[in-house]
Length: 176
Image 1 (tube, rainbow, N blue to C red):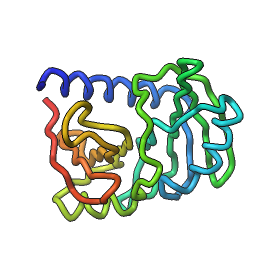
Image 2 (cartoon, rainbow, N blue to C red):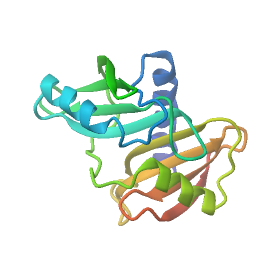
Image 3 (tube, rainbow, N blue to C red):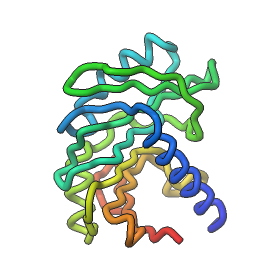
């Protein structure tokens, strides 16, 4: 079980690195839901079966907003992914990508501001930009579901999981 979790976090780290080197999706100064409708519309034009599998920012603010958000979609038919860049309410880039995660997130997720507020209430340490990722976590367990994974301090290597359906703290995770 532990090796599976570390493997997922390794994939998470590699994805973050890849995103930092490629154009990303942005919703300047907004919450995660700010650019979602535009991103979904673009993804459905790409492939009608595209489903949202991740929402990511590498530059989150302490209030849960960010200058950039990355919305990642997966098409089961195409077996490919798609990123749509949204900045200041406008699509600025669309990009076909490979994806590691293919499970659709629950679209009724709590927004990033609420997730960060809950993480701060549960001792989130913030030094620099927040890294936030919304995705399906804890596969094949009784706790499987859509979670916000929030990392506030790269040196502490501590992330917090917030249940994206309830907005409640789930647990802290120290990377090793």
